[in-house]
Image 1 (cartoon, rainbow, N blue to C red):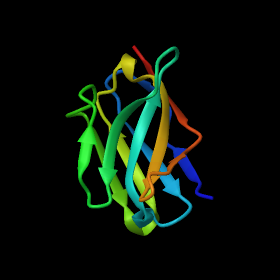
Image 2: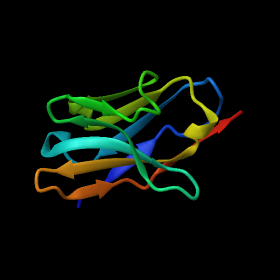
Image 3: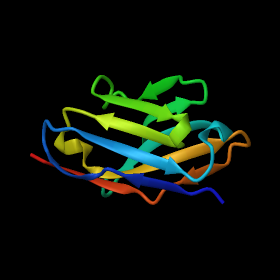
Length: 116
């Protein structure tokens, strides 16, 4: 069973920065793609950023230019650096890993709260 453990969330003022980490219980080489999703109260879960095994990244328009997803294969960890945080970034952020059989694994989520 794969475990994904997120960390790095918290309370931050608008304009601030946070870096989320997602530690996987097995080699992240085994996943075709890893990503970060978020879900705000009353809203659907949405993709924030993703990174493939080959290092190709993709971002939601709402975070493009102020967020960076990266991976450290040696540490089995994926990161999401978020800068210039806005109130509307407030949400629970979930780490996702999809393996080559298209099976999805999820972390438990970490809360980011941005105060205006």
